Length: 110
Length: 125
Image (cartoon, rainbow over all chains, first blue to last red):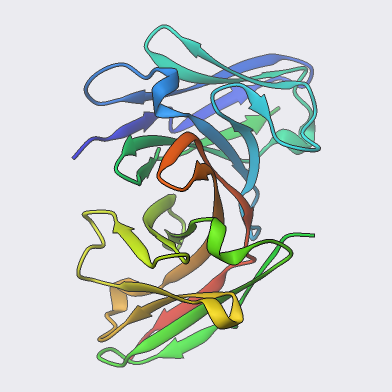
């Protein structure tokens, strides 16, 4: 079974820029995988940030952006704020209706 | 406003059955897939499966195939996730979410929004 990989943890300074990635255990991520990104804070349901690789969901600040970098999907936070400290998950579409979550990245802002 | 409201927390014993619900409003229930996601305590999100209420087409993650059943009732715009025999390892938060980016048999995207608030299922003897 295909594994979707994410960095387990990342740290960024307030005001800094960080790029989280979403890859495949075998192969490259392309727009055909329709990557999407979700933010989850403790005790809360996930919130949709980015879909279709680089489209921001309604109400999401423009400091969040999505792209394909090399062979991975990427979520970049530019000008990180304290309340960006959360868990971030990507989802890739595998076809035939099947989606797979990455293991998530715990982002610390300090 | 599109809303997904899930049923309340459940405490069950191993071997018992359970059906949790996700009641939707604010959109055409039969025109969008609904997905279910598991989050075990302290762990990440896991995609379980989806259902298209229009024709009850259902797809499961290989990890959950045969372990749970996803269904929907068009008359009350509600999706369900059920177990016939719970195990302690089913203890988790379960979320439903509307799948976007698909219409009929074709998809130009694949994302989940909005999400329900979650249903905590605790299985303990």
